[in-house]
Length: 286
Ligand code: KIV
Image 1: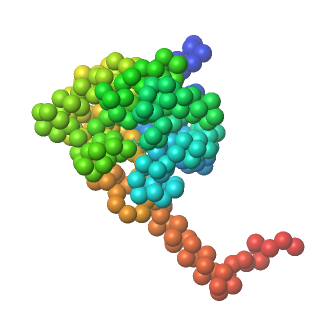
Image 2: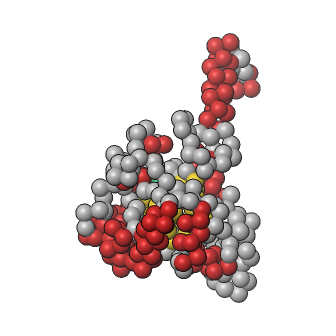
Image 3: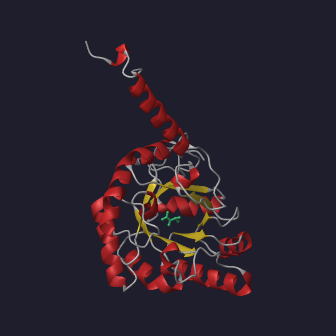
């Protein structure tokens, strides 16, 4: 979508790198839903990947607590802490010129009460340069969302399968199935909308349930394995780029195989050093 010539700020920065270097704001999420323009997000955990995704016109970068798995090597997202995520978020914010940067609040940093939630959200905003925070939970997190939004901090909500609650949910189980599941999903989504969230992630829910939620809400829905009817799509970049080792969720389409490329490169380097092929004369100083 094109820039408005007269406005100081772009009317709509959507449409990728070619259309706009200006910062994506939460109002553009609203505008994208209204205009039927899809919102595109990836996770990012460092400066270099953030810069690459930003230049490619990805609209928002989520510094997900999935860093617990992808950066720190934990089995689940539960152990990752605020102190571990803050430096990653700061690096991503430094790398992103256009994309909206969203900081994920980790497990144990917001559930106890709204005061704790506001305190954690303020830490991320003050110490990282992020533009918004994300937290998990529908009705159960509505009070937290309301208080964070009242403090002036935009909140992206997250319902359906919520990995921080994976033990309570009985593992990696699709949510929002059947009449009861679909009704609970809708209740959760409406609760976070009423609490002031500017967007809501729907993770691992049937596409028809996601469609019903998307049609019922005025804020955009962002799919993570929730099918094509949502207002945007988000993937964990290491899954999407073939960097993750181990199980990749079925809903992921892989756009690269950088894990294999890196392994091949490391093997080639080792062989070149062993054989003396590296360094060659052109790599030497006189
Ligand atoms: O941490 C994360 O990457 C997430 C997305 C999968 C929604 O929460």
